[in-house]
Length: 437
Image 1 (spheres, helix red, strand yellow):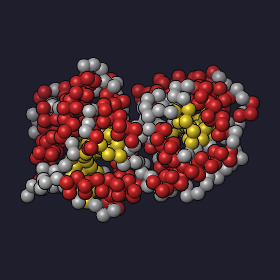
Image 2: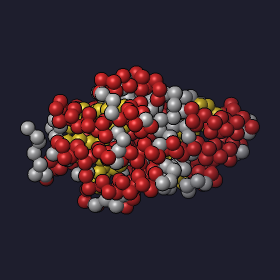
Image 3: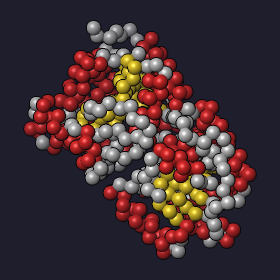
Image 4: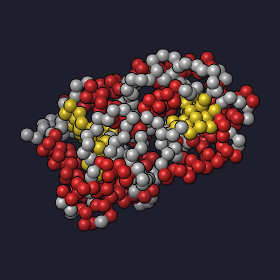
């Protein structure tokens, strides 16, 4: 089976979608499938060995120029290639906010309009490459914001198109009006172009089914899986050093670092917790620097600087080492999380988690038994749950080990690939379409 998986680069940062997509395609290749991971917008950045193709479709510079300057919608392909250099795109992406929804309303709507949008030339390039050079049996779009491509791919190649569901509502709801409503309406109009939708959990499958008015029969769940190489294989080592609460995510308001600092401030007043520290890791982009500076200033004013550490963005080995240094992992998101990949990574290393009772988290805790839930957006509730595990080490260890066992049993990359391949085969077996000769 030849599969083309179109992933969306995230402007030079590590993101959950990129990590998931690379892991999935690598696992499908390991399972014997002919699968290609093809970037769109920017190169795909992953902390594992990248299996993505070098060529980028819908290169971010060309997409932007075609949106803003009509002349670029008609330039020849050899000219466009000047702007599609992965090094140039990556260089610019690392110096600009390329994923800020507040400034991307027009572009988002245009991309969702596909063959009727300003980037129709880029779509034609993709279709020609798929039809002439690759001839896939199936195309998988990594998220629903790419679904404007689905109609043309389906009709030109006579093959099924699969779309991933992964946090699109959060992005859409940050778009300014009228683009927010228009983009959602366009997605609903185009929903029938897609043979199947895949979410990482039942919560988000159900949520997006209603959000986009999808036929329940075409919405599927394939839980996120990890390449477990390098992660812990048994109980975590308990050190005599300071107890550590950890946060691993992009540093931004949505991920809730400020709420964790609120809870940490409460814990810091407890004399029985005087050794507890807060360790933070994750990508910090230019647009979120002010937010982080405010959090750092709060820590300094409270006199907690010696108990707070920001270790920056981590590669794979550093990330695993960081997780294994923690007593608890906490991700108190403000929004309803659709993935929680870093939570699964913490559990893989037998680190128990404390999470807000919303989004995908209740389902994840029910599945893994690897942690506690607290009231969303409530620092006191969060502090109580953290203290519960900090002061009851046997229970914390039991939760961590239960979570680790669940990840090893149900969240490995091979299992994720097996379930995804089974869905693909079901789609291909159930269609009367044939590949173009």
